[in-house]
Length: 353
Image (cartoon, rainbow, N blue to C red; front, side, top):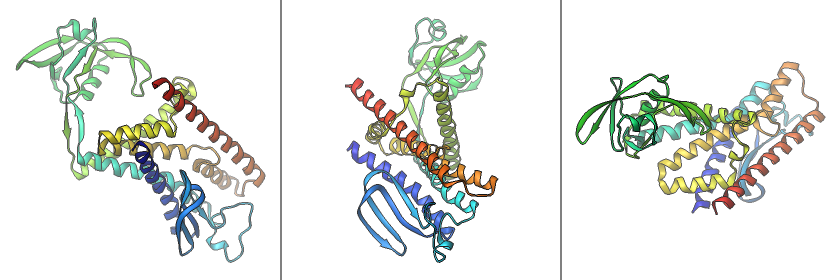
């Protein structure tokens, strides 16, 4: 079933991405010759009008082939009005950018549905206390429910943890309930080695507590769920760029890269937990797919957008030979990235047994 969940996830996200290119091309008057889920030989399909809608043999991708999208071929006079490369630069930018944009919109819609269906929120109930840390030495115990910190009500773990992290080391007054009795404790956070939002080492203020695992489900209305979907998408975009940046600086190890094997494994695990975790993971991968495609690497959508931007500035097409060399370099980088991702996937499988 893991393979089935992976194929569904990949198929949906590829379809959404290519649908963006397809709708944008059609709306700009460009003739679409092929809409393919997958690469390689055509397995099954149907031609409707100018477009051959098909499933191809290798599912790791997809493409939309448009009339006149090959720079080495000159379109005929009859083809020119419907050809991709004869369009104005702004039209080409919209067509190419629509794929990643649709992936981002899809993530927002999925998260909107997730928030309406209800999301689990971790309760501020203490689990294990780190020995020798302020929470333990001040008298707090596992099972204590935190009601407020410095008089401000607490109803979820995340907001409580944020108060501690941003305390600057100032003493905090914890109001807790234990055995139906309310008690007050003074706890002073200490600056120690911990983990950041992206699980990299980071010194921060902490008191040495972990959640018990208790949670409650929060359901959002239509508008508030849409707002939360936008916010969550923005946060995931920020974290993705943050991780990419830290990989370049070496703060995040390259072996954190994940390829199709890791995605399949996590997709299967998420699906077994339920439809909501699976949809959450689908939204995350959709955002990652959008960002990956927007990187300014020739072959990817971002590389094409870079070409169009340069051509807009210099007001003439980039030399075909230069483009071909850049595309070959971009393809080489992409293949190298895929090899690395597969290598780290296989290494994880061997280590996990």
